[in-house]
Image 1 (cartoon, rainbow, N blue to C red):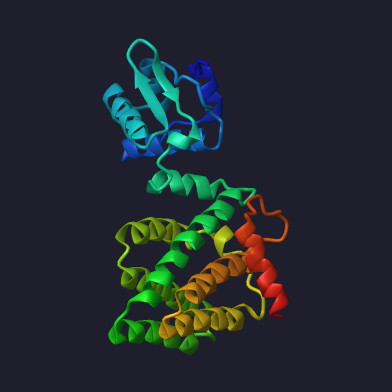
Image 2: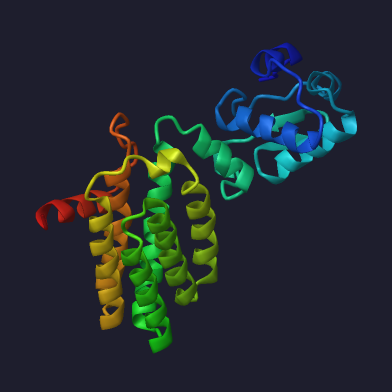
Amino acid sequence: MATDSSTVSGLIPRRLPPGRLGVAVVAELVELVVTGQLKEGDLLPPEGPLSEHFGVSRTVLRESVKRLEEKGLVIVSQGRGTQVQASGYWNMLDPVVLSALIDNDESLGVLDELTVVRASLESAMAGAVAASHTSEELRRLENALTAMRESESEIDSFRQADVVFHYALMEISGNGLAENITKHLYKRAVDSSRYQGINPPDAVALTLVEHTAIVDAVAAGDVRRAEKAMHDHIHISWERRRLPDHAPRVRGATAKRASSDAASSG
């Protein structure tokens, strides 16, 4: 379905500010696509009206559309125009795309999905660390846990120490691909107020208990226990922080199991 220039004008009621115009055009177009204002199968307006609308040259617009195509959001076909792609083609690890998804995630569904992916990858990495680690690597994890304990009275420092702990475990795992994917997801998520969510009074104490369980399993060389400790921690801590006015949209069997385990353990 074609999208005419008047439709886009209704979606973006202003011209972009001067300076880094190409970056601004890409960000605006990405947001229109990920929020569904430009839907799968829609055609972008012709180059002329669109460049005039944004107040940029055709060269800037052409480069911006090329960036959009590289991110998998559109496909440019000779004689057909620029068409919006299905979400399965999007590069959701791209910083601009991921930011737009998280920033517009009113239902928290994207963050639910992010939690499922992150728990799967980090639990595998925790198992790998339990299976093979040096005494120095174990000490690095223990030191990261100690830093969390020492900063528990200051929430911002505690959160930073928490990030350092997870990064340390990822790096020790030796799984470069899982580390890269998870860091992209985690880094952008922790900058989101929705991901930070609420802060229950016992959150810090519970988080320390969960991280201690991970370190204990790694130290014991217990692969399955390390995997479960990390998997459960990521799911349970998200449920603990998750804003209460949004019902979780993604609930896999493993997530349910984690919540059940938490309830049964008191």
